[in-house]
Image (tube, rainbow, N blue to C red; front, top):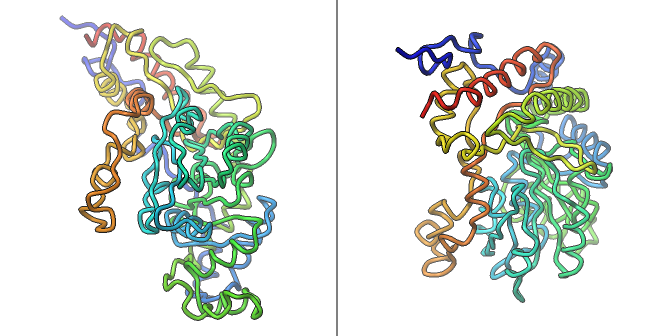
Amino acid sequence: MNDSTLALLGGTPAITAAGPHFTWPPIEDCDRRAVVAQLDTAVSIPDRSGIVADLEDALAAYLGVRHVVTTCTGTAALHSMYAAAGIGPGDEVIIPALTFHATATPLFHLGALPVLADVDDRGQLDLDDAARRITARTKAVVAVHLWGLPEDMDALTWFADEHELMLLEDGSHAHGATWNGQLTGTFGTASAFSLNGPKPLSAGEGGFVATDDTELYYRVLLHGQYNKRCRREIPATHPLARYGVTGMGLKLRIHPLAAALARTQLTRLEDHLAGRQTIAARMCAALDGVPGIRIPAVPAAARASWYALPLRYEPAELGGLPVGRFLDALHAEGATEADQPGSTCPLHMHPLFQAPGSLLPGYAGGHHQPADNFPAAEHVHATTLKLPVWSGADDVCLADAYTAALTKVATHAKDLT
């Protein structure tokens, strides 16, 4: 007879509250009013006016940068950033091997080569491996603040300067994160952010590029905005002004309703981040020392935005219990929001990076990533469990229930073997 307390084996679940247990963004009456007001004002804005100008001004003020251009998605923001940075055919850009694919995929559409470099045990760019991959064609390196944990920007800034590379940032997980008090997205020549549904700052769908470089700003406009906006913002005397009507032929602008939601969410971003800080600290304290679970090490210089709480699973401490079996037990306890990263994975695992020529003829018979040259990225991905990080005082009980469920499964892991 099995007398285990684990729910997977017949015990009582640690969490009985009905799901979903985490939804984002939190929608309040002010959000509803803002979207309805915009619906009554304009549902198409072809220039930099109204809610688009308001949001861009607010984002620029928040980050302390000169220019922000909003886009329809974070992927579009990355595409515009790379294009505006002058990255083109034959250029190489160093990307951490462990990230969401959109950090790299826009480069294919510019004829450039994303060059993957391995990560360290924290999942951040391994600068030694990155240095080995620099060639005469390497033009830039990208800082990715994965899960909202900022990269060591002192080291990355030094690396970019030392190798005479442009430093760009993918801040899609890291709105409001800081390194030594400086906001992520303000270290490089330019940065791109996502405003996708679950991001710390959400428009439902959207993104933006931030930069202090006015020339790059004009090129961002020409890449995805065109006509009225370009003609009004690019000086008539500028050599690129003659392209204002068509730009580069793409329309990547944000929807006004999305801009309205992002604008009202931005007014509460710091409150949300403070709440996440408190709850993340509480969850980490509860899990510190639990066998089989390693909490993230956050340097004193960093403030994380906690897009997610990435935990490292140590099977050797639990008798070699496979992570899948551990996760099954965790789900049975009712912790249904716990999971392993899916599409955020070592990029060389994706067929697009193994054989891009099948979809992108310009790469036929050419660029591909080695199949077994990113051992740290593979290990970090295979041993990562992630939890949501809640932000409200009302969420504390649920956060505690999740850490209790993790502790319960880890403490009784021997019952699962």
